[in-house]
Length: 357
Image (cartoon, rainbow, N blue to C red; front, side):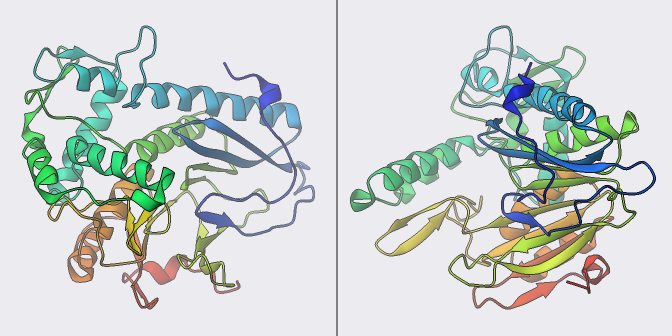
């Protein structure tokens, strides 16, 4: 359980990772005299989690924030690919047993992997959680390049191609009746980074909704999910980060969210430099290299798990194919920032734009 003293509360507008929240009136709202609170913690999914919401008092909001933390912590441990936890079979456990034996897991892992399977089919493999062998190589080279820029290198293509031989998603065997997951290929590794945070965010948001909790904005490393609207009856206002971090213009657009999710992927988030070239962390499964179509992609849709997956998939697709994918999805819209900083949007995106920004 999280020590409540570890939560920081302030009645002001907060900053939400790559997507920033616009300032609003922080005074007491409406007949209920609800106030706006902000909590954050740093120990989950290797990122910042922030909660902004309206409550009658700090004690009520503290309980909401604590419950969110505790539920997210369960998902964090289950989806971890780096660490072991006593009594918990997680994604790392599955990887450690690749080619050896099936691993009995929590239903939360099976449900997330089932969604990953649907995403794999829907995106023609652009979302592939079985890409761990390739992504591990990029992670190691990126880490070394950040720590020692003068010796930074790009992974050799032959090494990447060898790893790519072990990314066949059909060899991820899920036995729902036995509650097991088995990697048939002993050299396969799962990496669920393209979907796990969004999926966990969505499940926690649904848990809050089931409890009747409203007027909350949840951000897990920039995977943002609005639970209802603000207490003053207005939608949440969210600024989309300018991928040009050197620009004086910090936001490139502002959207209104009512119960929807907003997720951005960009080349400005995690990267390293080799011979003056930026190599970011979003790897195209076809080229095995960082995708170069866009500076950033932002997705708006109801489900945060799909928003997370689509932001990566669409970033890895040419505009026409990405647009076709988004238009084929219910309640999904997108904004693309091209290398020349021009912007394109899907057909229904305009409906979410805040014209009063």
